[in-house]
Image (spheres, rainbow, N blue to C red):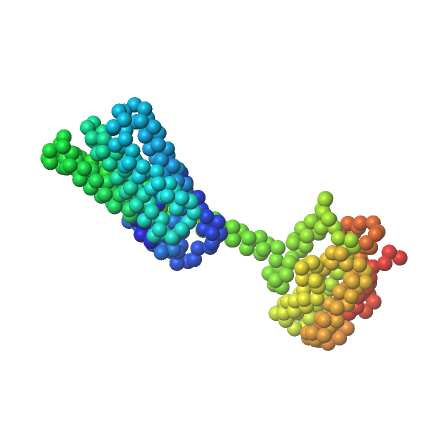
Amino acid sequence: MELQESAIYAGPPIASPEVRSQPLGPAVMAEVERLLGGRTRDIRLKGELGRLFEERSWSGTAKIIRAWMILVTLLDVLTLGLNAILLPNAVALSMLPPACILPPAALATAFIWRKPRGVGLQRVSLVAGLFLILLSVALVGVSAGGEFYERHLNIMLFVAITAIIIFIPLAWTVAVASFALALYLIFQLRNPMLDTGSAVAGTLFFTSGIVATVVARRTMTILAQKTFLLELRDKRRVAALADANARLERLAKTDPLTGIANRRWMMETLNRLWGAGAERPAGTAMLMCDIDDFKSLNDRLGHAEGDRCLVKVAGIIQSSVRRNRDHVARYGGEEFLVVLPGADVQAALATAERIRASVEAASLPNPASRVAPYVTLSIGVAAQGAAGEIIGPERLQNQADTALYLAKKAGRNRVVLFRPE
């Protein structure tokens, strides 16, 4: 859609929900940058940008068109009433038929612009409505004659100029200006009180004023579209900055090797679960998992194989818990902390055993292990009962650590539950 087909109105445009929510593609943003990088007077909105600008400006434009049409109708009715009171009956009656053209034309145009319709229908209705309004104003003066003849032709041009400035799309300003000047010239040539030269001179005088109005209208439209482009660019930059900040936040809370959460994220999660006013689920359990003889694996097979082992074990643990409820983090070195909200002792032990067995079944090589020639996992479990006292996260973690120590001491590759006794 060309620049000339776009509307402008008083006040900032109101974006539709679709315009606010739709992401702009690279091609559209490249066009935005190209237009902003050139001269302001060369701005032309085409294709997707033109459509977005029209959608964005339609609501405000339609509101002003409806208000203007209703105001013109009220002024016309008020003028007819005053004429009936102040003017002789013969003059007032001569004005009545042409004046009755205006209200239906204005109200029909306002009705069509109540909601979005086809672009062609709305533009044709606007131009046709304005033509009938201008014709009605001119015919009122022509019918009354005398001093009203010249006065109403001037009023007609004033109405055309206000419409052009306030809401007429730039592509249609030439049409509106042309038929307004054409009506003025035709009726002035038929004015018995003017000769041909005076009629043409008066038309040329008003033509210069309307041309200046059209130029001003074009400038306003270009500036409105430039503002629209600047807003699109700013929104894109803000969105890109927010996305970059979100990625940085995720990186700050993610273990770069295994891709699961890191210790910082787990601490924040624990604070949230046990925070003031938090709705803690009944019963919570912690699993402290440690890869058996991991230092020996690094010494024998190298750090690259050790990193591969950590990635594999992290993936196994992550896939062995409830995806949308449980929390897994690499707590440090070869240790992994698992938090199971709402899990009782039996559920926690079952999850821990599932993790241990899955790691053992993976048969990851660890020839230096004192337990088996493959990677194994020792797990300490601590849980608080549903009806018991609420144990803080530090204390529950210490209990899981104690249970893990007991699992290591008992021979590794096993699950041990913390028991106070």
